[in-house]
Image 1 (cartoon, helix red, strand yellow):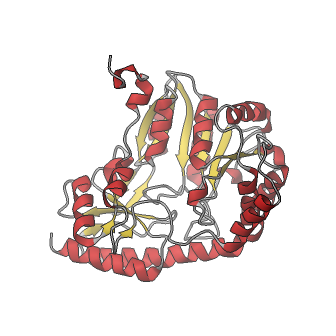
Image 2: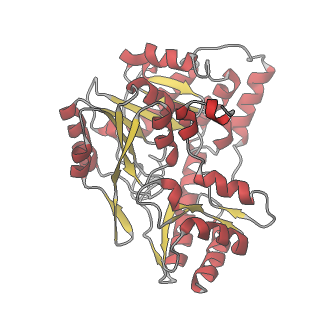
Length: 388
């Protein structure tokens, strides 16, 4: 038996990231404009970094609360009161070692091997991998691409429900499509979950990156006490903290001990000095967050207007999130095209094949960057497209 053959079937089945594959291929090239990953070009702001430095200088380098510092959980409570208009005490909040960790814990809490979780596709690929590694099955339900935009037929979700279904994974605003659920969509999804006794894992990481109002509709707007909903979130996008790997969960307090146990046996808790930075982000970061959102809006318009004007790109300006999902006439193999584009234009795009069923004909561009740089990327891409 070889070393590879001796590994677990679940580990062997974990797919290579189609995004990381391209990043590894071209990372570090001079003149590269990297639009492949879901992050901006700004470093974390000084006030967040300073809070972390102060914590380190104060010697906060010991084990800490598994659920997160009480001060962090209180700061999360204040954040939700300001931005979502809900009053949730600290017992609802759990600090995690990234948004990915938050999603993994949610899957672990809800599934046993053989169970099923329904998700909307095209989708960020990590959720499918997390479900598979847990021994459960990810069941895709397509979001429909019509006229350059995306729409959901909720009846398709109900058709996918089986006796093995344990949860619905709902990411809105969506990575990669920008599809954003209306409140009617959310009411219909929640009604399905109640009818069939299902949990909802609500990935609302992009809730404030919404270009038609103050924020996107949320299950928090319609849920009642005791709903089977777990919210996964991250500090990465809001406050330019992708490299920090800090996230959180919002969950019913009744399952708090289970989540604490899962944190204990996966990361044993988030480092206290990083939590101090996270508190600063929540309490002092609203202005920075608003500027990030406006930056994304401006760059979205620059990129999409230029590409749509070629008459060779099928897309609409997304209602939310930080991505343009592009169907380019003349490109039959977006994975191959992504490598060709980075070689010829030094613009890094993520191949749509990385985002599962329904994504294979597309390329994803993250526009959370300096509008001047986005214009340069758009010019390079338009030149490439018009030569196809």
